[in-house]
View (cartoon, rainbow, N blue to C red):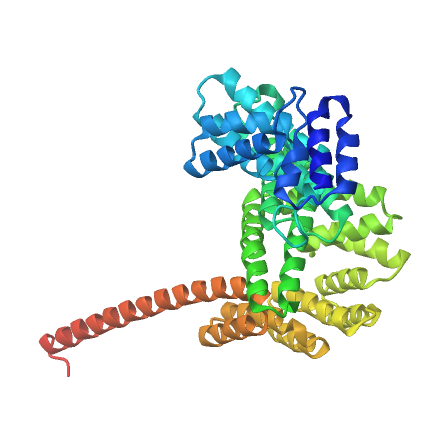
Length: 480
């Protein structure tokens, strides 16, 4: 009773107290998770109210009701009062308010009003950041609605990306959106304990792709790095799914990150950013300028290797410079590739084995064996590739799924489709994180099989027809 009375008096005197001081005092004296008490104290309007708690709760109820019926104009009136007068009453002011403003922008025909709604949408996210501490305090641990600064920033970027086009005039640029996404991702990474949602990773990469399309040469290196980083995030999350003991949680992670990864890889493949000649032109002068910079040389090798340019002179040069500074498994792999290019197969195997030797753990040795297998597959040395795929599994049994997926690719290339399908099944069974890729490959294999069978039937019918014709000609020609 004492707390309730205190809250009511403070609510009536809100205009006389600084907003933050008001909330700090309230946070110390009462329970944020109690709706009635939170609504009493959440009112910060300048006009005194007889019963602020009841007034605020009424606006919240009406806002929720209009949201459920999608009556956006009526909801706006209630929402507007709440965000101006009771910004910590409920987190739905922000979650549902953003949806409402998006619908109003879509429905509005007046450009000035569209712009006003967009400005309010951006202000909504800024207000949530301002009161984030108090909004989070009103939500019990483990419940939906809690957010970090990074969550809010990246959501703001996403809403601006979607609704700002054609509304914010010349202010709407992909550079601006890219910076907004990057700021949110950086904040989430720095805060820790949370991961960037798969959809946001995909959207960020799509903006990077737009920048690349607008100016290929200026943004090419940035786009290449964004591809590798977004791909790595998705792959790491899929690896976590493999380690998850709860099957439902594991599947949820796969559902969230498998599709974005597939889209990212498809967009990149179609972008043309990995054009060999252009990559060579981009990195040739930079490798020479950074021949004593080990970190840069390693990043160049990573980019070139990821884009099937690990058989180019500039890749070999980067590997040579890097190996001379400090032999690492990356540069040893590069030297192995160079030896292969020169036809020095003994040296190639020596450097490959050196790469494995330079690894510190069996887990890394297993991953390097996969890299070696991939290099051998690219050069169509399938027997050697299968050997290193077996080594990868021997070093680290957790790699069985990925290794079996590569085996499926090998047998597909060899035209041995039944074996390829078997390895697709084994890959899916061994590792949920590659199940999506394995299923997609299996579907393609079955399509090829069906086409091959149809072609075989057509050829058999044609051969039978020709044989029949020849037999008739021989008969009428008097041949036996």
